[in-house]
Image (cartoon, rainbow, N blue to C red; front, side, top):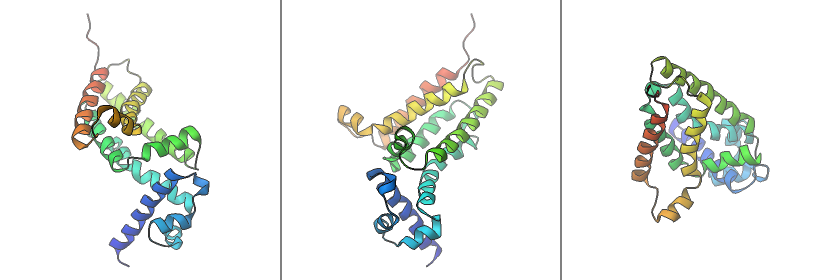
Length: 203
């Protein structure tokens, strides 16, 4: 089996795990079920991920990684970068449309073993986001009274909610939230978000 095929098996298992864990409670999903959905065998789960929990955590990590990588990059060196961050988020979730629901199941309903793991990822994002905000303050690009946690909660709200109840919005609008619409939404959300970060005018 060559490297390309190996990568294919891993991704198929991650995709199958996403589907299975969304459709049923974590404890009722079996590795045999996931392997069958990925058109492979259970030994591949042990080989790549160790066990079901390892696969579960890798599924979450691989989905969130593009968003975490941004916090390590120079994209948010100016407030204009937030629009691009929204674009990355919307694109990531458009490729994984049911992922926000999975995170909600874990954090709000305590379903699955990933709560501690997701909290670790979110805390990493919180710390890096705080560092970004403090740097922007030092350069006078963000108001000195801006609270980094308020910024994070606002961003999560603007980013996550449209994707979490996407079918409801699409039904109300009578149209699909396609790539073009999400591009417009990212631009508007970025402008709205950035304007709230700007230092207030004196006088």
